Length: 415
Image (tube, rainbow, N blue to C red; front, side, top):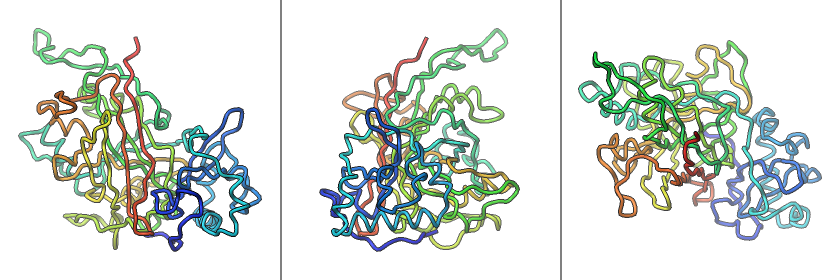
């Protein structure tokens, strides 16, 4: 699954060399400044290279970089992504080009970051065997935790692209139909009420941003993954567990998931992850032919879940059962097409240890085993809570890439 990459070279930009945002990373974002139009930027250290104003540097076609979204660049295809990245590395590592480039750098705190791309379709998977097993044990304690199909295909559902929001956007506690313990009629049937969710949760995930689209009726093979996926982005798929529990039978997640999904401002190019590919933990039984992968197909990406300034979990993406290439292949196996700006996410990242669980549902074991936070017992999210997800991965220089953070603070329900 590895993509072509440039040899690691350190940047001349002050403070960038050896950081998580050196020339071996170069994530993309969309930003603006007061009274200016939004445009594309690349992070280098604690600076942003303004690509919309850097046409004279020969980075790419101007219309790809001066757009208010990454979508034109996403749709340009893999050869353009590679040539653009190669030129950026040259500009930011060759000291003889410093005088030409430096006028187009601005301090990170001067840039007002926006949603990086216009999201088309959004699909969320369920690719962690540890998460799926934990959830199965919680909700089906007397049955096998994994349903019969789970080891044969990447289970997923079609989400709502219109409620994908940028990191930092407040998350309003959703209302929905919920059932409280003991809420039954005279015949013992459950009776719902319409109320704010009392079991608001997070899901620490990794998202994959579609670049080049595909043709309707033509599945994308696992081998064509790097031709269609531009990069990765951190994802928090907020979940109202009480709403979800009542509504999801028989068609699956709906309002308990669709109120908000947060993504990072920064999109890390797939090429930057050349050193992060690792073997999958093992798939048994072997998947069907269209899902077979060869060589390293998983990603060694470390995740931190921070709740109100305290790290409460460290989920390892390397433990995921289904690979990103298999998810894309299955997503399109029936001939469904993808478009620039489509997003699919991994589902909750959880490892085998208690301290590696990527949701509060698991950390509190369904609310029955509260965890300690600042001397308090906690289960689900309270109003005013701030959750930050951090991601890192091995870099070509031997250090660690720091992927974009995803942050959200819970606001009270409206009405």
